[in-house]
Image 1 (cartoon, one colour):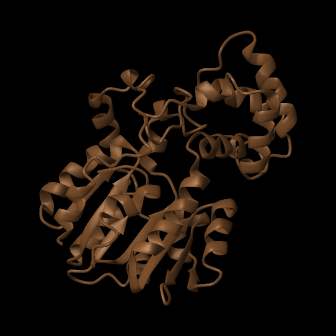
Image 2 (image 1 turned 180 degrees about the horizontal axis):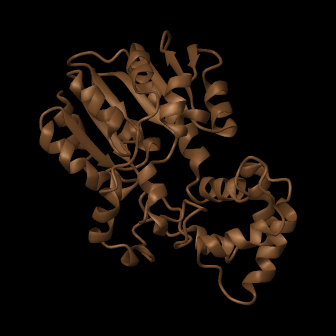
Length: 319
């Protein structure tokens, strides 16, 4: 069975896509393409990733988060066949250029990497994957577009969804969750020491009107958080993003399913950017032949996003 045949078996695989499209209408295809044109993203730890995956000509690889396409392009340039996945429609839009450049060796699906085994196709097929990359960071393109709501330094819609077809956005959650639920998420996913008092202030403020923008939320947070080497809103925004996109559930499932479809001695590489997601990966790799690499000083100087990055990879040595 060829990769084309395997992918055609699952051409409608979008099991995490919610057909309810409540807020999508405000973000047109034209707007998505404008956002997709930012092209400011610099892939983190490019060569270490290629080395970790041992990318080779005619090998089969999966990039679980296509993003701006940097890692995928590098694999394709090495002669590999690459299946890319992404929850973000903007990333799918950007992939059109790569599809044109590599029509026979590049394939992409709009779905979460949690569905990696379903997208790969028939589990009974003899073909396994040589290597899989899961980049758990989010793209600079997402940050640069104020209306995505990821950046506390830009005023825009309080959204934060990776996938616009899902119903729950940051705006919906912030304006409907109880003070206790808000505090629990801020503490669990943001390790925010002022979680409870900030949550209560959010509930108080929204009685006067819905909280709709990133700056409106930042103003509330800034009352209780001071700059301590990080922006006052860093931890809260991180927590909201993780919760709204159910990131940790997707990561845990992706790790399990990715390992299943790796061939013997195949490699799974994961780029993490904060301690909570890194612990999930570290724990999963605990009983595997695994390795850790940090970015070089030179890369950090060139690309600030690499500062908090960790590259962990494993080699599958048992079923």
